[in-house]
Length: 326
Image (cartoon, rainbow, N blue to C red; front, side, top):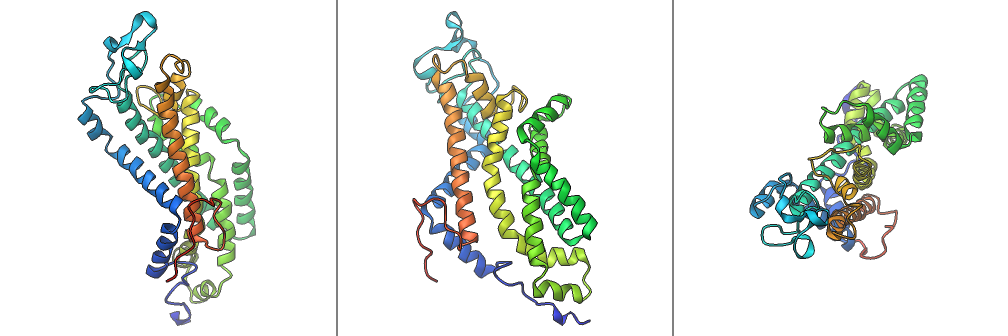
């Protein structure tokens, strides 16, 4: 049969082209809260990428001990005001070790953001592959993959991650391991979203025309279905990143995540839980960084969801403007 049956363009609602992309950015910019959140996230990513440069400007690194900067007679409390803040140590030093807090904070941003983004990528790939395969397969394939997805969704993420991290040899790179475990344990929800969206999309005329023209299943999925999955997948992925940051911080706080001397915000919180009175900045700095990062990513994720699906109102009433007219 002639390929003329196959539409040369995918409908804009399913696969936004240049005009759809412009409309999306216009809707996103119309939300002041999302714009501020996007700028905050961009700044955090820039700080994480520029961590070596920033610490070089300060003249410090995240692993060098400075025992002369802590008072051993008082149990290792930093010497000087505000935890040893000064020209050489912009945010002070770590209790007991004297390691530079600014260096550990910016390098910790690399670990926290890197683990969260890598885990999200694994979740998206696995969820989309399993969801699309289930929706396009026969009844037995759909039933099998759907039951596996149900099991994954029912698994408690933190408990499963704790169990898996405890049995893996210590020589395996810890940030990579944490990313893989979070990704492999928590892809179930996005798999369900991908399956439901694929079942809806494959009944549309342009997909039916593509199948009637003789395209194989892989070609139909790549050319006709995956573009239509972009909106729900991107929306949910944007909301998964802050959740994954919180999971990484929780695992490091519990002592099974990123291991010293690699800095991590969760690990810093774990070490600081006995210093909140003697050196409060050691607790407040990583806690504040985590709070700002998770809040900014959550607000940005909500803005992306609203921009991609204007029929659903934003959950954030403050800073949300009406969509500007074309």
